[in-house]
Length: 410
Image 1: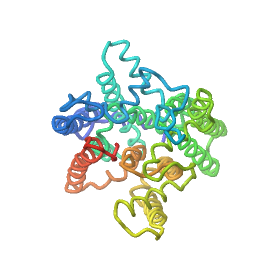
Image 2 (image 1 turned 90 degrees about the horizontal axis):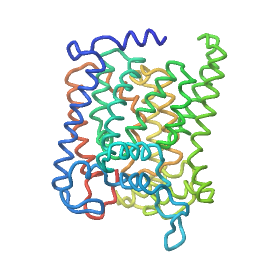
Image 3 (image 1 turned 30 degrees about the vertical axis):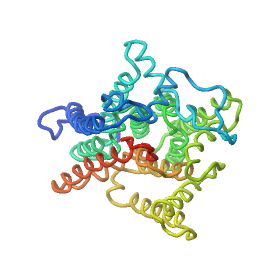
């Protein structure tokens, strides 16, 4: 689909009366944020003293706990030149696990405005979140009709982990960059894509997954070059973007190596976060999910040790996810968006250890909301929104509220 056709489709009136599409998107997203804010204020008022705040903190302080404190440390003090070690000599949790773009932007806002970290961080996150909703709508309009795209925005706005879009986390910045990058790929604007991919790769660990996506995208376009009339120049630019994304994806581990002098500084830092579950181990690609689900089966569900619970669950999840990607609703997203979702899922399967952060880390598969939004039944749509809002409350209770010694970080 050409850029002009996409722009014409996006410029139409929205289902919300005669509002232009961008006003409807902003109104939907603002309404959802008010609901989420109300829930967070209720929890903040009941929040006892914890490692980050006193009792009953205000919204900005409550929104700056957990990883928000790591970003705060980075904004104020930067990264350690020497990796901190545990008593038994392993790399301890430290700031190298968090990338620099988000804390740098917040730091700039702090300098220009005189605001403290909590307020400045929330402002940056919320601004990026509103922007991400606008770009997400444009992305959905490339593959869905207007009403489906607008309902997809509703689902994006009320998704269970959507509270993370208005706290001191880098997710909202990641998602506006990711949505922009995907939109540029769909519109074949590969040169404009390059700086977006680079910045995104230093915001959240997305570069390698995006490189895999671009490699698959380029291969698909090459195999269909004759039937679809793909210009050679576009293939070359897509290939160049793949290389740039791969290099950018390795950029932050390289920076950590150069500064600390330890080749595996970034990987060892990331592994420190799973040590409380399975101890310190080397990174084995695709082993984390099996190890993690084994741990949860035995320690969470109290199933007997021995059977390969983790492997069995992984196989079921992979089969179900693959089947969904080939279902009619998912096919409506087109080849490119499904390739991105598959690439990111492969990346998570390769490097991630499942725990309470899983729901937040699944946010980059947001194009799937376009498939979930397709049914037109009012009963279905109302039910899905209600379930999402209830799940938000559950996510806040499980992951965000601090309850004594809390092992369920968001």
